[in-house]
Length: 93
Image (tube, rainbow, N blue to C red; front, side, top):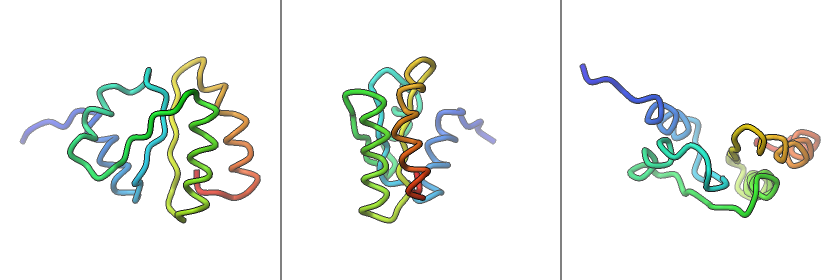
């Protein structure tokens, strides 16, 4: 049985949850992003992590689908404001 890379597992997990859009800053998850090439997830590049969080919330509200945003290490702190607003509004981010 062939082994699945963790990056591929994460990409397929997102598809399994109905994720159609992924908002990110271009310094993260490069292997996972590469694994999304043949999957039906639209990758949307943002200027920063805070923008990714707000865009994911807007997408979730408008589409009714889960909005997914990502950051790494220090940038994760920049997601906080957008994620707080999404949480307070009960948006599926």
